[in-house]
Amino acid sequence: MPIKRRTLLALAPALITSGGLLSGRAVAQAADPRLSIRAVGNPSAKVHVEEWFSLTCTHCARFAAEVFPEIRTRLVDTGRVYYIFRDFPLDQVALTASMVARALPPERYEPFVLALLSSQDRWAFGKDVNPEEQIQKMAALAGMSADTFQQTVHDDKLRHAIMDEEDRAQTQYKIDGTPTFRFNDKEQVAQELNYEEFAKKVEAAAQ
Image 1 (cartoon, rainbow, N blue to C red):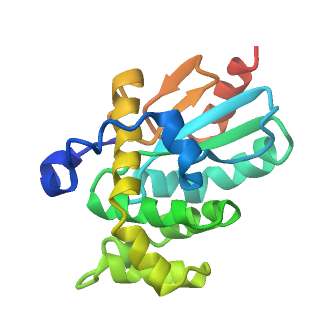
Image 2 (spheres, rainbow, N blue to C red):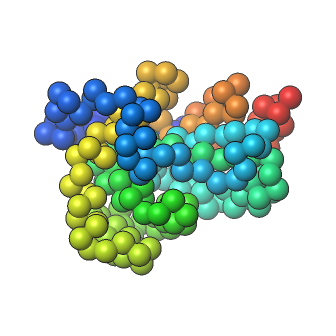
């Protein structure tokens, strides 16, 4: 079963202001390139798959490690699937990590996200670990300066924008856990899938 979302408003009420939830999605994306779609593959592919994920979701991490590489090779790189990453942070640590990932150049987004998912035990769940410090170290390896990192993690507009999108997903698609997949807006699956199950969903969506 997917991990259920913990309400961010309850975790960090100080993060929310009356103006934070009023920005329009299209306007925000146009004004801030960090909010543009993060995806891999050919946008003209017959099947578009969206994955709502959290960087602190262990189910998402297992899917990324065990299933996504085959999807990437057999479905994305062959032009059959356009794969879209959708942020759905389950807690403040995941939200911070999502902000940093989006602040990187688009071509570094996928490698950085996959690196975070593959090392959750070190940066998110390690004993006596400061997650923000660990995220900064990984961001530095991806080319982000210390100044840019600090500006990013304290950027309330970016924080609100990601949370707005999360709220939109809850309202529009009733998403409340990760990972959740949508195939061409035809079918929604709120659980981990193995490659065979995923490929079948892609085949059905292509019909």
